[in-house]
Length: 244
Image 1 (cartoon, rainbow, N blue to C red):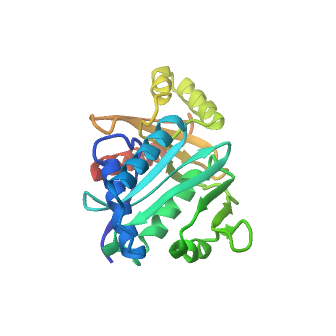
Image 2 (cartoon, helix red, strand yellow):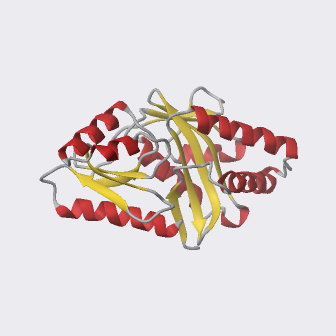
């Protein structure tokens, strides 16, 4: 199995990301369904991607990378605690290597803090894949699938793609305790890279924030938490940045 890295994509509008999405989708559809997309299809898909990214406050995406090349992706949004997976595709040469499973797993973990359910409309070929990952059709014979988020991720670091009320409160409290309110104003900006640390009760005990196109980042933890939490946050961000 090839050495594939799964990374969050905080800002889908940077050059090249949507081109990669379209290329992967086009090749996957041709391989599985012998379906050739047209330029009109691509324009329509790109328009939908841009609309979703621009107007949905919590728009998530992960890419699967072989070195620096994107070979698969998952993308969608989360509104009113309901997450919707819009796209999940993998290049033909990387199919049947659990890349899709890893993308789905990472998205589910990240959504666990904000969503109570995950929904999608599945093409025929992918229905068995989703059923094997505990998604259920909403009715007999339906291609509309749903999975309820049963538990929060604990003692782990997750990427965050937007600000829920719970996250906004946690960020405010932590930045205030660390006497750095400038970080809070930066957090309010859309699509900046943020990773949070969740404790054994799935509560935010720290976060790291930075600019993926500039040096440096800032990590904050609740006062009294072990230094290793801050170190883990910094390592996570630095790994993310070095892998981009």
